[in-house]
Image (tube, rainbow, N blue to C red; front, top):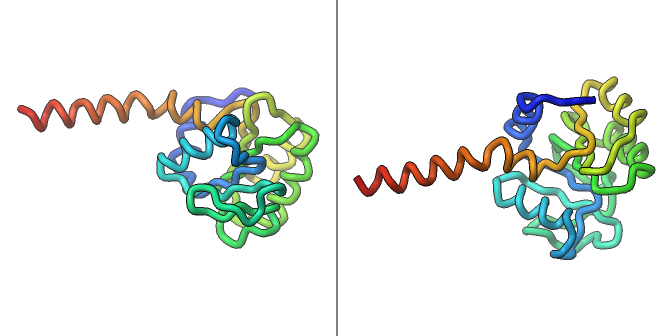
Length: 155
């Protein structure tokens, strides 16, 4: 299913807290880069990785599963294989009241799980990266605004 830039922009503007399922503590992994980027842009990241539960990622305790989350979450960002998606979506729908978006990373799609989330009223993004979309949709504007402020302050 194709999504518009307005659809993506709306999600990224309204999202405050992201549960990242499969976030790696390894600084060379894509999920680490995505989590770090989004954290530095002001999003609260709740890291979920069964192998690293109890450790810390940018000041947040790493959860072993969605079941451990005790706060509102706007978006679940999935860094797991497609066959893991149905259970992640099921757990998210059951445990995360107020959830607004299921986001599946590049290369990850699951038609049935996506439809189930949509049937529950959630927005769904498949086969895209929120870091890449954020940079594409907002990155140039931030840089241009920063440059304009520097030039203006010198005049």
